[in-house]
Length: 253
Image (cartoon, rainbow, N blue to C red; front, side, top):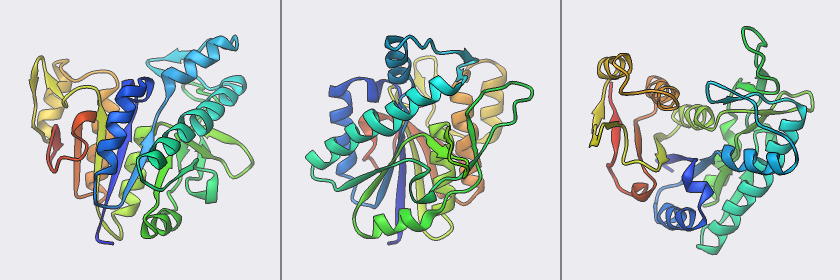
């Protein structure tokens, strides 16, 4: 196995069955060994509200108390993860759904409560790539939920972009690796125009003038971190273009 693709999806891709089906059919067409990392925050919030648990967010990040942790474990590790696995099986791709606790793939530490106590949120210690590579070598696609564990019997809510970045960096130690962040837009946009390439200098400028904001900032930060850690290519692109060789916005050094 010479190369691996790590693809992260979230947002509107997961929330809409027709969009998810179209994305997964395209994803299945990728010939290289691949890993899919998914989010699912909107679904977790929706189901939590039905159970009387109102999501508590600070700057777009979820405060994960014990009741919220129960909901996201059910939604991320169960409903969303197994739904994606079942669809991949239907589209002819053998897949396995995993959390970070399964096979000890992603141990993490509970985040320091200072300056903000985010509750049961995990910061990744490491990614144990041995099992991921074992699955890939058997032509099985791992589907990773945004859940890790603390080694003490507790699940932890962990950002899916962070998992994708960390997994791709670990796999890059032994394989040529590509990281792809997929969402509903063509890539990083300057108003209505696609920015096809971004280096660190341009990124800092666009962030300073307010053209890159909110959730795109940590995504790009994690992308550059992956490049620094040996990942060959990183792109941010539309869910409609996951199988294209080049598409969207490429992060360059």
